Length: 444
Ligand code: PLP
Image (tube, rainbow, N blue to C red; front, side, top):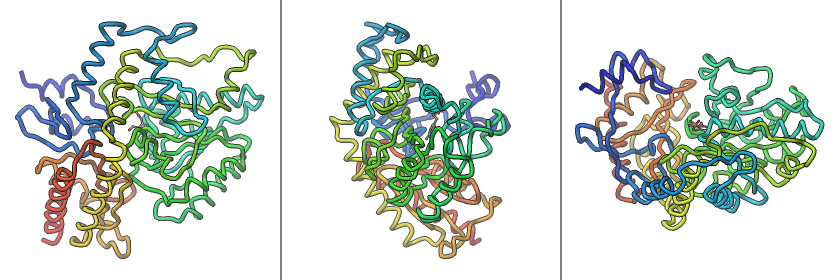
């Protein structure tokens, strides 16, 4: 049977142009994975330079995780964590994540993914304020170009307006300040302060941001940005939720992204890398201060929970995955190989005219393409420069992703944390060839 035709007929793909799917069919039908590589049905091998969706931290084909899942499924595949039920995998994983999270972020609420985590975090902080007699603190301030998921509140917190079209953006409660991209920390903080002031600080529950915006184009803030964010939130008594869904578990060369700048938020949301994508799992880590309020005896039940909050099999896989990240020194490797990746980007920039800013923090990196990097002049959208580079890379067997939002042409990289130096060079070689090819086409 023809899988591509069946795909068109029956499979509604996430975040996809359905029209394009119908006209062109899928581009890659993955069949197996090993290490940093994916293989399609025709046997062609690709470097998965995005770790699929920024999540396959320990690489594909790891039997340790498959064996862990099988063992847990045979013993206790599922059991509830509602009311007075619990189980060892859930308890152990919560304890482990509390140990890894900074300072007093010690209590974990589990979900099945990033969107559920961000919606949960938003409900939890509102609940926290309500218990304290401040039900007016409901608003969430986030950043433009931020991506927080597609559930109800996470869609609204997302700062890419295309995502608001379908779901009915809850615009009365969600606001967006400028992201610190192509601006100084001072300018970005002034904008955030202005947003807090204009909305009324005592109506704001929390500020939510990714330590490094991923879907927005791997936008790395200046080193002092989050220190200033922390100070500003403290000044107004606003909670700070760090969305570590992409940046968590070693992606940026530290266990959590904000640890690059030694900043401690009040809440962390995570997903993706916690299980390296082998099984869906996410969660919210809250500080003792928040936990203590939730614990108050008179305040009743937490009317929020998913069937799969703390799924035992997912928790067992998460624990094993984190154990492997630690045992194999993958956070350190992310830092080292991220340095090599950035060196490679810089060599390409020195050589090719259309390469503008290049950046990486650990194994989260990006290359920007520009008509004139000196003046920050962009290509027009019709030229489809970044998509053409992605297509060249694809032909050469490298999977990356482009961001073309708001006149940018950004090529994003997030390879598995197990990558070695030779493989980083392989990506760099293909990237060089691909950008050169498009540069030549543009001249022709
Ligand atoms: N937050 C960030 C920073 C993300 O990148 C994503 C997904 O890409 C999400 C949240 C949503 O996670 P999920 O797709 O698991 O719901």
